[in-house]
Image (cartoon, rainbow, N blue to C red):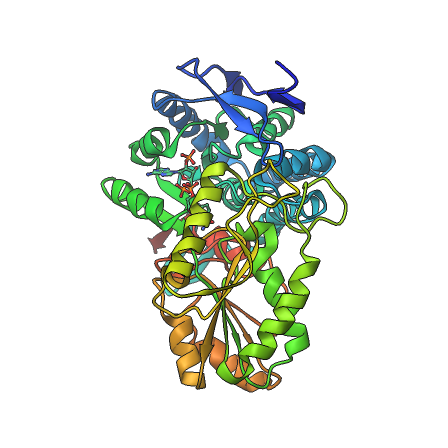
Length: 481
Ligand code: NDP
């Protein structure tokens, strides 16, 4: 390894994890994982192959009977052990995710790893509180684990998205095959080491690598997979739905968003502005529930723009490992290119650049950066107002009546999240209830990891997290007496 090509932190992960063993992939090709700030390779993983899929699925299938017939408390003991080890390895997990995805390290510890821990703890609570057998008339209704679950995850919150799936899956008695995104696979590789050292029965948790286009598709189509839980783009979600429908599999899809943050005329502007920037720029905007469209009263737009312009200066750009940095690079040069093309298209369609833009920041000749970008004069039909950008790009749209604000908020194919601001709690709640979205925050309320997470419309099907997420992993069986 030459020092120029490779970062100071370097690790090769040579194996898949199948049937309780670290095994070689059926192909010897590898994939290099880049540090998003230095652009140097800092780890490798096996490239993976569709031929790995049946091995992993078979291992999960064989483990299912044993795992599902263990008592809840025994399964919970394994989950507690996994949770403890994630906690112990927080520094390492946060570091690899910050290198992959670009999130500042302090936030990585708190959010990337912290949420993963919360996911598993909440799955434990949910299964302990779940009533697994209910009497309804002359029936006893049992909740049984659905079987083998394929968990296909993206790169933006890589460990959290895995734990949000395998926490409830393992708690309910399912066995899993995880395929992480090729761009951010390392926390999954470390998770396999954790699972191994917790001595989970072989085959309960399996990890494979590989591109979605061949390995991911083969996993979705494998006849021994009972359920697919996917987080990622709506494009991939559509394809997964099509492939899975051939086997009439259950599919839970957590897809894209284009969420509106609506400021009603009586909102508190001083609280709104910093929260609006946070809601759009967290994790450099690489967040499915990012509040990427500000919908503001036309006669307050200038005032809001001025405040945004001043406040955005606090969003300092830089290395994820430098103190005080709030916005790191994006995950990859491909993502940087995609985000640039959205900014260009907005400007071509008549939007006005308030700050940021497509240029490489002068202080950082390397790193997949996009400066925090605010676009004014955005209109509802522009591409940037309709499509998921997944970068630090905030669009400001204006309205003249509350009805128009609602129309704009609901006018996309997505319905993942939203927000509304008003000093009148009733007014805010009424507005929130008319937004076609799975989650709506009122006046900057904080994220709740126990609340159902998922979308209306083309933002997905099904829900994740807490007791709502757990419910997706059950089949219902009614016995009549
Ligand atoms: P994808 O949706 O393509 O990838 C997400 C995961 O699905 C990855 O593990 C990927 O594998 C896998 N995958 C992709 N296609 C298929 C398929 N047909 N069958 C099975 N598995 C598949 O996201 P991208 O990384 O390409 O990002 C593109 C855009 O998607 C982003 O710009 C953003 O807009 C959106 N996105 C949304 C996310 C969200 O949480 N809503 C998360 C990530 C992206 P691999 O990457 O290894 O090929």
